[in-house]
Length: 415
Image 1 (tube, helix red, strand yellow):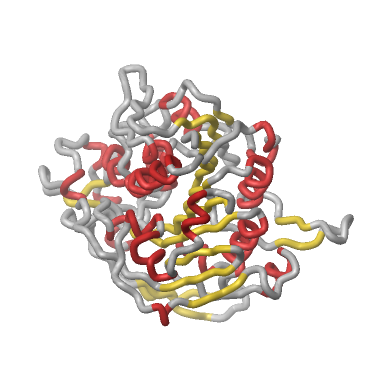
Image 2: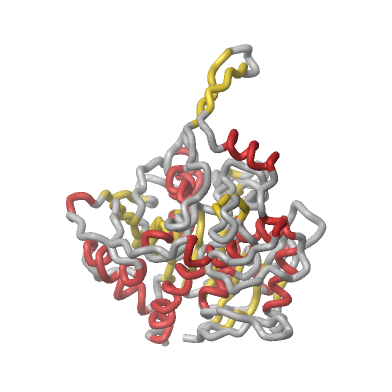
């Protein structure tokens, strides 16, 4: 099978960096791709800003293939090039659906929810394989109907003729430099060789050694009695019934074949992670060091708190928050980076610079290394604040690279 890929919600190209093992770019800024995958189209559009810095970065690094800087909802899905793999990271939103008013049997999801754009592409293009990334809370959303949103996704995939496997992975557990927990989803069309082989495997073999995630990210042995079984088709006449009635306790790993879902809690066979000390820069510019005002603010933000507050109804309560370490330990991997990185914020990393013995922010290059991008990947003319934002939005590309090695073998077995 051709190793062609479409990247949705592409950002600055994290999936592509991982798939094609990109570690550098040439003097003209073009990425030097080392992998076997051919990216035939990408879409990146940021609705909240006029400047499209992520897309500009993507185009600088990948100038030769078609890409789009248009709202994906406005794109004719049939016009997207044919591809073997659809990939992308998308936000956890409200996936609920309802019957349309104008058509009793019509079903409509909320506007702006990006899952429905993925669903429409799967309907129109029917790629053989799908690789998606989302936050770990996807499995438990929404709070009032646990598991509903993930159940809707599973039912959509089942109705479209896909099986799938998922795993929540903490990148640092498997040797990467960030404690970032994300849900990864690998779906496969039911007429593929892979589906036919997968559907014949014993449940425990899928979880422990034969599933795509088990091959990349080893786990400890499980007991078959610990596996829970759910069905997203039986008892639900359509997607609206799933939306209205479905709830389930999904564990950090699972798979689905023909609507039957099997889920279990797995524990990783961990590797020593890359630490901050191994990736920090030396002789850092003075602008990254904290001034006295910033140090005082961080001391407050990272300290313990018990603050009296009053809600909208006049009810008085105490907001409490535990203390954090005054700065991040260099001999640990990074915490999860957020889009506020580089600002005076409780979640921001600050380190004690080993050369000057003073507190400072991480540099943009250090943030790129935490996500395993090439150095200066986002140095494309965007403001410093946006470079931090891009890495807060990105994924750990090393996770994708490990998966791509197995996906490459999977595609070679397909006619």
